[in-house]
Length: 77
Image 1 (cartoon, rainbow, N blue to C red):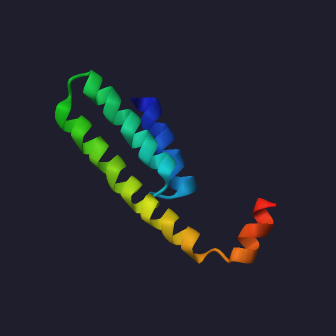
Image 2: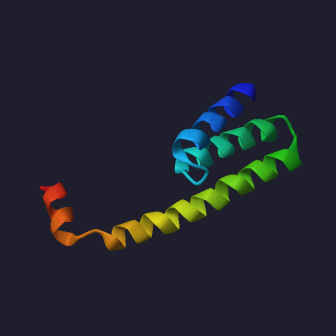
């Protein structure tokens, strides 16, 4: 768990608290706690993961809506 915590700290510093990679790390930490039958900690970690994923999916959708179509086409071709 110590290595997950270190990875989480690095990701939060470099990517920000609301990055999908941070959410994945919280989820993995939750799975570890779940396998250790530490249910309350597991639930809390999974909840953090879901909250971030909800935010990133909403932001990801908004980003796609704001892309200039000509730029988008240039990137495709």
